[in-house]
Image (cartoon, rainbow, N blue to C red):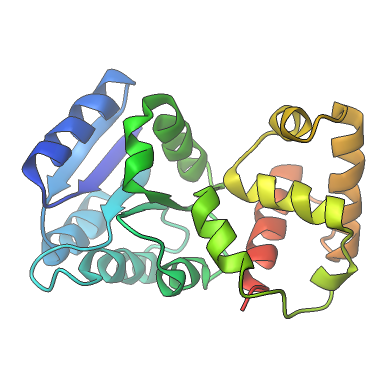
Length: 216
């Protein structure tokens, strides 16, 4: 699996390169500025991009904007964003096109190698990997849309864990319920959000994006 990595801090960039390579990823390019990131994404067309939000020259949201520009040219390009802090606007911009293959992790999660690598793989596969703190921050603002209001409190809990990227078994373990109960909750979520039967993996992504888009 080919990765384009963007991180301006040399030690962190080198650490991420070694970590990704240790888990079998190929580094197609490792860059440290926004313009170099956009160029690398368009030229390399990787399986996934791992992108620091703040890159030179502006050190504001250069990395995010380069990733968004690349997704406009390459629809569905998987992008996992790394950030020092939760920024609701960044998360919403990343999710705006509703196509999946997106993630938003806080940098301190990178120090848990297995969780980080799992997030990279899920995003590359077209799924979502949203940091729990990002979800919590978004949810603090409340839900605005019907049909999200149709969900029960338990169904919203299940959907929040799905947004983190949890499998059915992981959701069951976190909520101390059976796998069958989780499957039933997810079926109800799909039905209440009017998600037509297709591939369940695609419907999971659609449900998560609908959930995150519904928070103000």
